[in-house]
Amino acid sequence: MSQVLSNREKDILRYIVENFVKFGIPVGSRTISKQLGMALSSATIRNVMSDLEDNELIETPHTSAGRLPTDKGYRFYVDELMNRETLNKNEMEIIKSKIEDSKNTVMNSDDLYTATSELLSKISHQLAVVTQPFLSSGVFEKLEVFSIASTRLLVVITIKSGYVKTLLMEVETEPSMHKIDRITQMLNERLSGLTLLQIKDTFSDRMSDFRSDEPELLQMFIDSIEKINEEEFVGKKVHIAGTAEIITQPEFEDPKKFKSIINIAENKNLVIHIIQNPGVNSNEVSVSIGSEMNEKKLKDYSVICADYKIGSVKGKVGIIGPKRLNYAKMISLIEYTSKIISEYK
Image 1 (cartoon, rainbow, N blue to C red):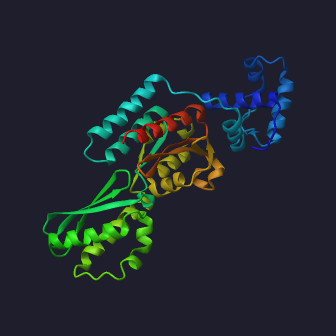
Image 2: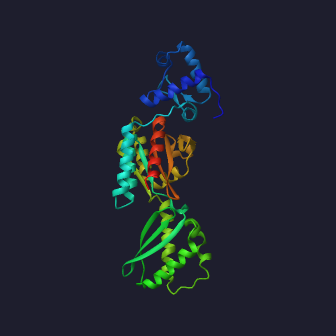
Image 3: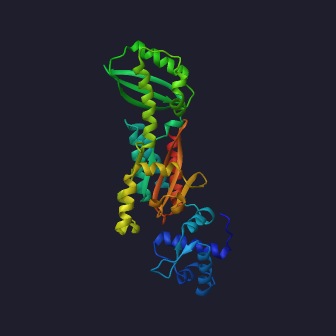
Protein backbone atom coordinates (compact mmCIF):
# COMPACT_ATOMS: atom_id res chain seq x y z
CA MET A 1 0.00 0.00 0.00
CA SER A 2 1.37 3.38 -1.02
CA GLN A 3 0.02 5.32 1.96
CA VAL A 4 2.62 6.35 4.54
CA LEU A 5 1.48 6.67 8.15
CA SER A 6 3.35 7.93 11.19
CA ASN A 7 4.07 5.48 13.99
CA ARG A 8 1.38 7.17 16.07
CA GLU A 9 -1.18 6.74 13.28
CA LYS A 10 -0.18 3.09 12.84
CA ASP A 11 -0.54 2.37 16.55
CA ILE A 12 -3.98 3.93 16.70
CA LEU A 13 -5.18 2.22 13.51
CA ARG A 14 -3.88 -1.14 14.76
CA TYR A 15 -5.73 -0.66 18.04
CA ILE A 16 -8.98 0.31 16.30
CA VAL A 17 -8.88 -2.75 14.02
CA GLU A 18 -7.94 -5.25 16.73
CA ASN A 19 -10.35 -3.83 19.29
CA PHE A 20 -13.23 -3.77 16.83
CA VAL A 21 -12.44 -7.33 15.70
CA LYS A 22 -12.44 -8.50 19.31
CA PHE A 23 -15.51 -6.70 20.65
CA GLY A 24 -17.50 -5.56 17.60
CA ILE A 25 -17.97 -2.07 19.07
CA PRO A 26 -16.80 1.17 17.38
CA VAL A 27 -13.72 2.52 19.14
CA GLY A 28 -13.64 5.99 20.70
CA SER A 29 -10.71 8.28 21.53
CA ARG A 30 -11.20 7.93 25.29
CA THR A 31 -10.88 4.13 25.07
CA ILE A 32 -7.70 4.47 23.04
CA SER A 33 -6.23 6.97 25.49
CA LYS A 34 -6.85 4.63 28.43
CA GLN A 35 -5.69 1.42 26.81
CA LEU A 36 -2.67 2.38 24.69
CA GLY A 37 -0.75 4.03 27.51
CA MET A 38 0.18 6.95 25.26
CA ALA A 39 0.89 10.28 26.85
CA LEU A 40 -1.71 11.81 24.56
CA SER A 41 -4.91 13.63 25.31
CA SER A 42 -8.23 12.50 23.92
CA ALA A 43 -8.21 15.65 21.77
CA THR A 44 -4.87 14.70 20.19
CA ILE A 45 -6.09 11.16 19.54
CA ARG A 46 -9.26 12.57 17.96
CA ASN A 47 -7.07 14.60 15.61
CA VAL A 48 -5.15 11.49 14.60
CA MET A 49 -8.41 9.63 14.09
CA SER A 50 -9.67 12.49 11.95
CA ASP A 51 -6.56 12.18 9.75
CA LEU A 52 -7.11 8.42 9.45
CA GLU A 53 -10.70 9.10 8.46
CA ASP A 54 -9.58 11.61 5.83
CA ASN A 55 -7.35 8.87 4.43
CA GLU A 56 -10.42 6.57 4.29
CA LEU A 57 -8.87 4.06 6.70
CA ILE A 58 -11.57 4.39 9.36
CA GLU A 59 -15.13 5.68 9.39
CA THR A 60 -17.78 6.87 11.83
CA PRO A 61 -21.02 4.86 11.90
CA HIS A 62 -24.16 6.96 12.20
CA THR A 63 -25.12 5.61 15.61
CA SER A 64 -21.79 6.03 17.40
CA ALA A 65 -19.07 8.55 18.16
CA GLY A 66 -16.48 5.79 17.82
CA ARG A 67 -14.69 4.63 14.70
CA LEU A 68 -14.44 1.34 12.85
CA PRO A 69 -12.14 0.20 10.02
CA THR A 70 -12.98 0.63 6.35
CA ASP A 71 -12.01 -1.92 3.71
CA LYS A 72 -8.87 0.15 3.11
CA GLY A 73 -8.18 0.16 6.84
CA TYR A 74 -8.43 -3.61 7.07
CA ARG A 75 -6.18 -3.93 4.01
CA PHE A 76 -3.53 -1.65 5.51
CA TYR A 77 -3.71 -3.59 8.75
CA VAL A 78 -3.30 -6.98 7.01
CA ASP A 79 -0.44 -5.80 4.81
CA GLU A 80 1.47 -3.50 7.15
CA LEU A 81 0.48 -3.82 10.81
CA MET A 82 -0.67 -7.34 11.60
CA ASN A 83 1.42 -9.71 13.66
CA ARG A 84 0.63 -13.28 12.66
CA GLU A 85 -0.96 -15.37 15.41
CA THR A 86 0.27 -18.95 15.43
CA LEU A 87 -2.13 -21.80 16.04
CA ASN A 88 -1.81 -23.49 19.39
CA LYS A 89 -0.37 -26.99 19.59
CA ASN A 90 -3.74 -28.61 20.21
CA GLU A 91 -5.31 -27.01 17.13
CA MET A 92 -2.41 -28.11 14.94
CA GLU A 93 -2.58 -31.68 16.23
CA ILE A 94 -6.34 -31.85 15.66
CA ILE A 95 -6.02 -30.62 12.07
CA LYS A 96 -3.13 -32.93 11.28
CA SER A 97 -4.71 -36.04 12.77
CA LYS A 98 -8.13 -35.38 11.24
CA ILE A 99 -6.74 -34.97 7.74
CA GLU A 100 -4.40 -37.93 8.09
CA ASP A 101 -7.19 -40.17 9.42
CA SER A 102 -9.54 -39.10 6.62
CA LYS A 103 -7.01 -39.89 3.92
CA ASN A 104 -6.20 -43.28 5.43
CA THR A 105 -9.70 -44.52 6.19
CA VAL A 106 -12.37 -43.08 3.91
CA MET A 107 -13.74 -45.07 1.01
CA ASN A 108 -15.03 -41.98 -0.75
CA SER A 109 -12.49 -39.23 -1.47
CA ASP A 110 -15.25 -36.63 -0.99
CA ASP A 111 -15.18 -37.44 2.72
CA LEU A 112 -11.70 -35.92 3.13
CA TYR A 113 -12.86 -32.54 1.86
CA THR A 114 -16.13 -32.68 3.79
CA ALA A 115 -14.29 -33.54 7.02
CA THR A 116 -11.75 -30.75 6.45
CA SER A 117 -14.42 -28.13 5.81
CA GLU A 118 -16.33 -29.17 8.95
CA LEU A 119 -13.17 -29.02 11.05
CA LEU A 120 -12.22 -25.59 9.70
CA SER A 121 -15.67 -24.20 10.44
CA LYS A 122 -15.50 -25.40 14.06
CA ILE A 123 -12.08 -23.83 14.64
CA SER A 124 -12.76 -20.57 12.80
CA HIS A 125 -16.50 -20.19 13.60
CA GLN A 126 -16.87 -19.01 10.01
CA LEU A 127 -18.08 -20.48 6.74
CA ALA A 128 -15.41 -22.97 5.62
CA VAL A 129 -14.81 -23.93 2.00
CA VAL A 130 -12.73 -26.81 0.63
CA THR A 131 -12.66 -27.77 -3.03
CA GLN A 132 -11.53 -31.02 -4.51
CA PRO A 133 -8.50 -30.61 -6.79
CA PHE A 134 -9.19 -28.81 -10.06
CA LEU A 135 -8.34 -31.56 -12.51
CA SER A 136 -8.56 -29.56 -15.74
CA SER A 137 -4.98 -28.36 -15.22
CA GLY A 138 -3.76 -31.83 -14.22
CA VAL A 139 -1.50 -33.78 -16.60
CA PHE A 140 -3.12 -36.93 -17.99
CA GLU A 141 -1.04 -40.04 -17.29
CA LYS A 142 -3.23 -42.99 -18.21
CA LEU A 143 -6.74 -44.25 -18.77
CA GLU A 144 -8.13 -47.58 -17.60
CA VAL A 145 -11.58 -48.95 -18.37
CA PHE A 146 -13.22 -51.84 -16.55
CA SER A 147 -16.48 -53.58 -17.36
CA ILE A 148 -18.63 -53.89 -14.23
CA ALA A 149 -21.92 -54.79 -15.98
CA SER A 150 -23.03 -55.48 -19.52
CA THR A 151 -23.51 -51.80 -20.39
CA ARG A 152 -21.77 -50.10 -17.45
CA LEU A 153 -18.09 -49.21 -17.45
CA LEU A 154 -15.80 -47.87 -14.75
CA VAL A 155 -13.49 -45.23 -16.20
CA VAL A 156 -10.32 -44.59 -14.17
CA ILE A 157 -8.30 -41.52 -15.15
CA THR A 158 -4.90 -41.16 -13.49
CA ILE A 159 -3.38 -37.70 -13.24
CA LYS A 160 0.41 -37.33 -13.07
CA SER A 161 1.80 -37.73 -9.54
CA GLY A 162 -0.89 -40.16 -8.49
CA TYR A 163 -4.28 -38.45 -8.29
CA VAL A 164 -7.04 -40.77 -9.55
CA LYS A 165 -10.54 -39.86 -10.74
CA THR A 166 -13.16 -42.58 -11.23
CA LEU A 167 -16.38 -42.23 -13.22
CA LEU A 168 -19.23 -44.62 -13.95
CA MET A 169 -20.36 -44.44 -17.57
CA GLU A 170 -23.25 -46.11 -19.40
CA VAL A 171 -23.01 -47.43 -22.99
CA GLU A 172 -25.88 -48.63 -25.16
CA THR A 173 -24.42 -52.01 -26.11
CA GLU A 174 -21.92 -54.27 -24.43
CA PRO A 175 -18.42 -53.76 -25.93
CA SER A 176 -15.81 -56.50 -26.07
CA MET A 177 -12.83 -56.22 -23.74
CA HIS A 178 -10.56 -56.55 -26.79
CA LYS A 179 -12.00 -53.37 -28.30
CA ILE A 180 -11.90 -51.58 -24.95
CA ASP A 181 -8.22 -52.47 -24.51
CA ARG A 182 -7.35 -51.40 -28.07
CA ILE A 183 -8.97 -47.97 -27.77
CA THR A 184 -7.60 -47.46 -24.27
CA GLN A 185 -4.05 -48.20 -25.47
CA MET A 186 -4.42 -45.79 -28.38
CA LEU A 187 -5.75 -43.00 -26.17
CA ASN A 188 -2.91 -43.47 -23.68
CA GLU A 189 -0.32 -43.29 -26.46
CA ARG A 190 -1.74 -40.14 -28.03
CA LEU A 191 -2.86 -38.15 -25.01
CA SER A 192 -0.41 -38.93 -22.20
CA GLY A 193 1.38 -35.78 -21.06
CA LEU A 194 -1.41 -33.36 -21.98
CA THR A 195 -3.58 -31.53 -19.48
CA LEU A 196 -7.24 -32.49 -19.34
CA LEU A 197 -8.13 -29.03 -20.65
CA GLN A 198 -5.80 -29.50 -23.63
CA ILE A 199 -7.40 -32.88 -24.32
CA LYS A 200 -10.88 -31.35 -24.20
CA ASP A 201 -9.94 -28.53 -26.58
CA THR A 202 -7.91 -30.56 -29.12
CA PHE A 203 -9.35 -34.07 -28.96
CA SER A 204 -11.07 -33.98 -32.36
CA ASP A 205 -7.91 -32.82 -34.16
CA ARG A 206 -5.72 -35.38 -32.43
CA MET A 207 -8.11 -38.21 -33.28
CA SER A 208 -9.09 -37.14 -36.80
CA ASP A 209 -7.11 -39.95 -38.50
CA PHE A 210 -8.36 -42.68 -36.19
CA ARG A 211 -11.13 -44.90 -37.46
CA SER A 212 -13.01 -46.95 -34.90
CA ASP A 213 -15.83 -49.40 -35.21
CA GLU A 214 -16.70 -48.49 -31.61
CA PRO A 215 -17.32 -44.70 -31.77
CA GLU A 216 -19.39 -44.98 -28.59
CA LEU A 217 -16.25 -45.81 -26.61
CA LEU A 218 -14.46 -42.74 -27.91
CA GLN A 219 -17.50 -40.65 -27.09
CA MET A 220 -17.50 -42.15 -23.61
CA PHE A 221 -13.97 -40.86 -23.06
CA ILE A 222 -14.92 -37.40 -24.33
CA ASP A 223 -17.93 -37.43 -22.01
CA SER A 224 -15.68 -38.39 -19.09
CA ILE A 225 -13.41 -35.38 -19.70
CA GLU A 226 -16.43 -33.11 -20.16
CA LYS A 227 -17.91 -34.36 -16.89
CA ILE A 228 -14.72 -33.64 -14.96
CA ASN A 229 -14.53 -30.10 -16.37
CA GLU A 230 -18.24 -29.51 -15.79
CA GLU A 231 -17.97 -30.48 -12.12
CA GLU A 232 -15.29 -27.85 -11.57
CA PHE A 233 -17.37 -24.96 -12.83
CA VAL A 234 -20.85 -25.73 -11.56
CA GLY A 235 -19.91 -26.07 -7.91
CA LYS A 236 -20.11 -29.87 -7.67
CA LYS A 237 -16.61 -30.09 -6.20
CA VAL A 238 -17.07 -27.53 -3.43
CA HIS A 239 -17.60 -28.59 0.17
CA ILE A 240 -19.08 -25.87 2.41
CA ALA A 241 -19.61 -26.12 6.15
CA GLY A 242 -20.23 -23.84 9.10
CA THR A 243 -23.56 -22.13 8.53
CA ALA A 244 -24.53 -22.94 12.11
CA GLU A 245 -21.18 -21.57 13.31
CA ILE A 246 -21.17 -18.27 11.43
CA ILE A 247 -24.74 -17.23 12.25
CA THR A 248 -23.77 -16.98 15.92
CA GLN A 249 -21.64 -13.91 15.04
CA PRO A 250 -23.20 -10.56 16.10
CA GLU A 251 -23.32 -9.37 12.48
CA PHE A 252 -26.12 -11.82 11.71
CA GLU A 253 -28.57 -10.62 14.31
CA ASP A 254 -29.89 -8.42 11.49
CA PRO A 255 -32.38 -10.59 9.53
CA LYS A 256 -31.17 -9.17 6.18
CA LYS A 257 -27.57 -10.14 6.89
CA PHE A 258 -28.68 -13.52 8.22
CA LYS A 259 -30.45 -14.17 4.93
CA SER A 260 -27.41 -12.92 3.02
CA ILE A 261 -24.96 -15.43 4.49
CA ILE A 262 -27.45 -18.29 4.06
CA ASN A 263 -27.79 -17.38 0.37
CA ILE A 264 -24.01 -17.34 -0.05
CA ALA A 265 -23.64 -20.71 1.67
CA GLU A 266 -26.23 -22.24 -0.64
CA ASN A 267 -24.79 -20.73 -3.84
CA LYS A 268 -21.90 -23.06 -4.68
CA ASN A 269 -21.37 -21.46 -8.08
CA LEU A 270 -20.75 -18.10 -6.40
CA VAL A 271 -18.44 -19.64 -3.81
CA ILE A 272 -16.30 -21.41 -6.39
CA HIS A 273 -16.08 -18.17 -8.39
CA ILE A 274 -14.92 -16.29 -5.29
CA ILE A 275 -12.13 -18.65 -4.34
CA GLN A 276 -10.94 -19.19 -7.92
CA ASN A 277 -10.51 -15.43 -8.32
CA PRO A 278 -8.71 -14.41 -5.13
CA GLY A 279 -7.73 -10.90 -4.15
CA VAL A 280 -4.47 -9.67 -2.68
CA ASN A 281 -1.93 -12.15 -1.38
CA SER A 282 -0.56 -12.19 2.15
CA ASN A 283 2.48 -14.42 1.64
CA GLU A 284 0.95 -17.61 0.17
CA VAL A 285 -2.54 -16.85 1.43
CA SER A 286 -5.03 -14.74 -0.49
CA VAL A 287 -7.07 -12.19 1.47
CA SER A 288 -10.03 -10.46 -0.21
CA ILE A 289 -11.89 -7.78 1.73
CA GLY A 290 -15.35 -6.44 0.94
CA SER A 291 -15.32 -4.16 -2.10
CA GLU A 292 -12.08 -5.72 -3.40
CA MET A 293 -14.13 -8.63 -4.75
CA ASN A 294 -16.32 -6.53 -7.06
CA GLU A 295 -19.37 -8.53 -6.01
CA LYS A 296 -22.20 -6.67 -4.28
CA LYS A 297 -23.30 -9.77 -2.36
CA LEU A 298 -19.87 -9.85 -0.69
CA LYS A 299 -19.46 -6.20 0.28
CA ASP A 300 -19.80 -7.08 3.99
CA TYR A 301 -17.51 -10.14 3.87
CA SER A 302 -13.90 -11.19 3.68
CA VAL A 303 -12.50 -14.30 2.04
CA ILE A 304 -9.21 -15.94 3.08
CA CYS A 305 -8.00 -18.85 0.98
CA ALA A 306 -4.92 -20.75 -0.17
CA ASP A 307 -3.96 -23.47 -2.63
CA TYR A 308 -3.13 -26.99 -1.64
CA LYS A 309 -1.45 -29.40 -4.03
CA ILE A 310 -1.89 -33.12 -4.56
CA GLY A 311 0.48 -34.36 -7.22
CA SER A 312 0.25 -32.04 -10.20
CA VAL A 313 -3.19 -30.62 -9.36
CA LYS A 314 -4.31 -27.90 -7.00
CA GLY A 315 -7.39 -27.29 -4.90
CA LYS A 316 -8.51 -24.49 -2.61
CA VAL A 317 -9.15 -24.23 1.11
CA GLY A 318 -10.58 -21.11 2.72
CA ILE A 319 -13.07 -19.33 4.92
CA ILE A 320 -15.75 -16.71 4.32
CA GLY A 321 -16.75 -14.45 7.18
CA PRO A 322 -17.71 -10.91 8.12
CA LYS A 323 -14.95 -8.34 7.62
CA ARG A 324 -14.60 -8.25 11.40
CA LEU A 325 -12.30 -11.29 11.27
CA ASN A 326 -9.29 -12.24 13.35
CA TYR A 327 -7.07 -12.04 10.26
CA ALA A 328 -3.92 -12.74 12.28
CA LYS A 329 -5.16 -16.20 13.25
CA MET A 330 -7.34 -17.04 10.24
CA ILE A 331 -4.43 -16.59 7.81
CA SER A 332 -2.32 -18.97 9.90
CA LEU A 333 -5.21 -21.45 10.06
CA ILE A 334 -5.69 -21.53 6.29
CA GLU A 335 -1.96 -21.67 5.61
CA TYR A 336 -1.43 -24.59 7.99
CA THR A 337 -4.45 -26.55 6.74
CA SER A 338 -3.40 -26.23 3.09
CA LYS A 339 0.10 -27.35 4.03
CA ILE A 340 -1.17 -30.47 5.82
CA ILE A 341 -3.49 -31.48 2.98
CA SER A 342 -0.56 -31.14 0.57
CA GLU A 343 1.76 -33.21 2.75
CA TYR A 344 -0.44 -36.29 3.13
CA LYS A 345 -0.48 -38.00 -0.25
